[in-house]
Length: 347
Image (tube, rainbow, N blue to C red; front, side, top):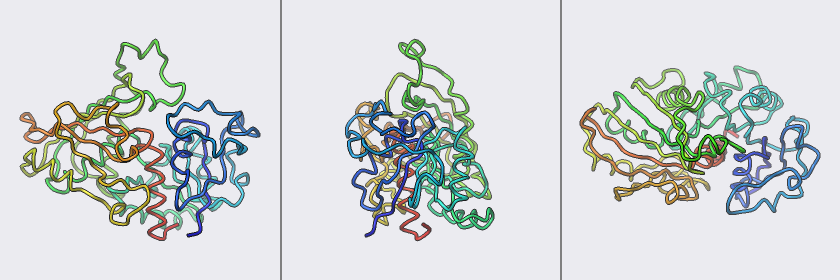
């Protein structure tokens, strides 16, 4: 197979680093270009970046020059992965799509646009049809495809099998979100050490709106009601979420656990390179999942569910779900989106 040449926008940040890690040795994609803000351009990646990620180093890109985040600067790259901050991404991603690039974005800028899909591949692969509609409507050859907010990606992967099997009336969510979700340098130590911060700007609104778009259709969001309360906690990676679900049909905890454990989506059926098998890992221990122990399940691409039990107040079930926020909730999800669209012949 001739590999697709790809670039990374926002390559010097934490999510940019995850893109670099996951693209190393990828069977379908070849990393050809790194781009970032003006303060980083013109220097090599090694000269620019303070590498803060564990595991694989950036040796394969150390000597690559960091280019401006402009379409003309990326040469013959076929598609780009965007780890740009939202305030920058809106215009830059549109510039790239207008210039003919397919953009797989981790930014929130375009997620709620009616002709832009928020894809969580196992959950709503059928929303990929919006890409062609977007191209027709905007009269450009490129496209913008977003992945969900990190919290939303973890949540919706665990909720999809429950929604399909039992239906949903109401969903409540309390999150314990890792520091890496705030980027680098992130939250000041005097704010987070020995502390929990019960507020993350716009996070609750993102989770509520994005989840309904993903679990419904772009034209008609899902009709169940959802309420989220989001908190920053002093763990490095891995968002832990307590989920309380009122189901339409009666749902026994054992039945829910079985539905979750057996779930697979189109990425698994297609055998995509980054698709985790299984996408949802169900643990029986009463003290799991835990971020330090479970965030790297299947290279961080699976979510881990535990403590599935009856919720007497809602007449449904409650459980904990954990996912790696910069992998399943960011770079890994974007790469899986690109694999899905390539397998479907859309790119």
